[in-house]
Image (tube, rainbow over all chains, first blue to last red; front, side, top):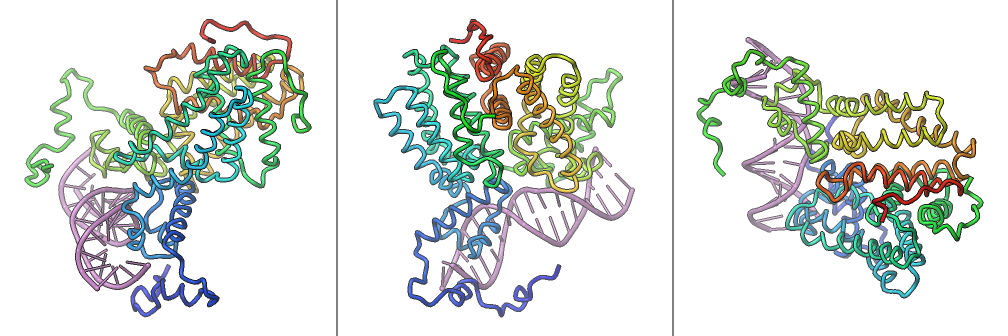
Length: 233
Length: 233
DNA sequence: CCTACCGATCGGTAGG
DNA sequence: CCTACCGATCGGTAGG
């Protein structure tokens, strides 16, 4: 494959000029700093999911955002810091909602239902962010890791709290809390590996089936067994 | 940090010589080709799990195996081929056993129990291989990917077959087979993310709890509910 | 946000 | 299984 000739001749307009030419002249033209920052984080999220953190180069990201490699360092200080920001951006809303649920005075069963719905909604709405969280956070190193670990711990402890409270209150059967928590998270998180928007099942169907599996089967108390839903066969 | 001086002086013995000196002079000294090949594949499995495929360099691997970078290419033809061999090495025994189980004339419930035990045994015995299979196989490219895909498909279809047969035979409740299969695999595969040999639970305990969750709760028919085991609370 | 540039490392080859 | 070597790419910096 031939190199593009402007690599050699250095005659073609630089990206910023090209963008200005392509941009509609309707007034709200120049992207603000925050817009570009957000664009970088979202593009990185998508690329990190697709190619992995270590498989994504700064050049890949610059191409996706349509700036020069070096320009990215106007917005981020390192690739590690970018990973941190991708993770925090992805986690923020999710964790806030889980905190709310934990703070209500609903029954453990209702809390768990809401927590699982929150979890599933999030996977459907930001699948790339969740996949990066699950697969790539292990590549975060000190000092970024330390700052981030609290988020993960908080998430674990909120979830565990709901489950253990429910077991103590006899709203759930006397299962092993630790393994059951991890089993439930495994069921749910595994969605990021197989869910595709054009698959045979809608988001509502999948949510219904999984909630039924967890609440009415895995954690059935022997009393309240729901009827099978329309999609359960 | 200072470079080791032999980098500059080129006086220290080369690795092969050093190994010969360190080797006990008891007769069975020189490793055979197959031994070295196997050592490479096992070291790669461990490194790919620890650092990811893209995070592991040929130099990392050469260091682990104690040969020069270039020497690895006497045994493998490319990093991609190495990944393929790591995956095949990890999958072989597992798949063979699953085939055996599928070919028996046991009930679906018994087949599923054996399939899950096989799956769990494998995670406990070869955690690195399973983790690499789950996380890194997506980095396998054509033409290696094509050759490998059949293994994955076979594994899926064997597992699905057992579950669907059991649902048709009314040995399992009328759950959605696809989602339930993925939920069970998620529960089990998630083990690779959290199991640590020095954790609070033994392999036997975890196996017992997870089998109880799947067979007696998730797939309870309403008739046979096992008593809670000694570790279930 | 750009041009210009860099040392380190990457996977891999030639030839023995 | 080694020495010697390579072109490409890596994440990142200087200076504007």
